[in-house]
Image 1: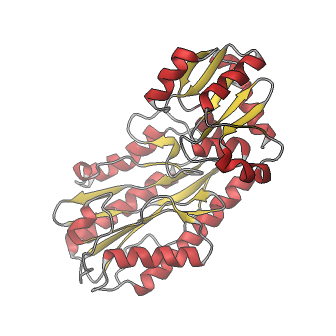
Image 2 (image 1 turned 60 degrees about the vertical axis):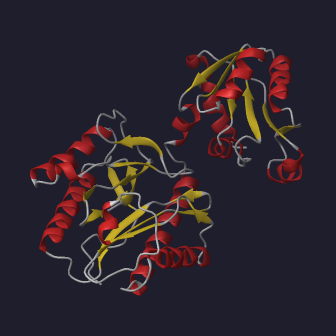
Image 3 (image 1 turned 45 degrees about the horizontal axis):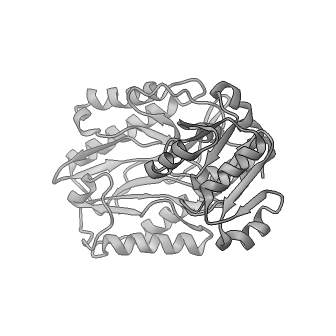
Length: 355
């Protein structure tokens, strides 16, 4: 257990008007105590007096090994065990993640000995600023993913299927130390590259098409998120002009990344430039987000988001434009916010690569 993380959570109790907090989200469990169970298989309960992991016998041996100093309750009646701990500790108001299933909240609302209070982003907000060990893992993940995408570009060719390309990259990453993907690897080519979340298919890559590769891989529990759009031969002047606009927009956004700037400000920098270039309507998603234990974390970088960047957050910057039936372009990099600005962690070239 990371004692300082539990202390930071407890330090928020007073402002939240709670005296305990229930955690189901696996990434939040892992952040607080160093391990987790599958969603729905148990809870971490933090009171003013102790931390208790409530789960069943399937995890008992594992938890004895991974978190030997944490109190454990082994039962199939998780929620009744929550009640027993709260009663024993004299707890009166329990905060809980507002992402809990309605059925679970209904039971708590009817049976809990303390008042249940749904709350948003309590542990998630603690996770936004990374500790040195977390930054080291993120740096490893982004460096390895950069190497993997660079290696894929050496073998990408017309006649290869999107699915084969995605599987090739996944195998390369696993062979070199990645422990898994944070989302199914996207390889979308030709008209399908205009689908921002187009899953890899059996479509054959073809000459002169754009190919968008979007991937995220875990190393030491933390994930990368990298996107490149390349061309298999000259894609034509209109798409090359659009690529240049996206590349310039990303450069302008990244230049403004520093502590204190808001997500809305960063989004407007890129969106305004693309609008000036005639591509505003083609930029159909947000500009970026935080990464860490999850592929999408705070802060949010998009229209209307007031989130202000802070030193040692790790974010993505990913402007893109999409033209139905023609193709799409997205360039995404991972940045660590520093006291004086930022460091770009991903290293694949950002200029249009024509293979």
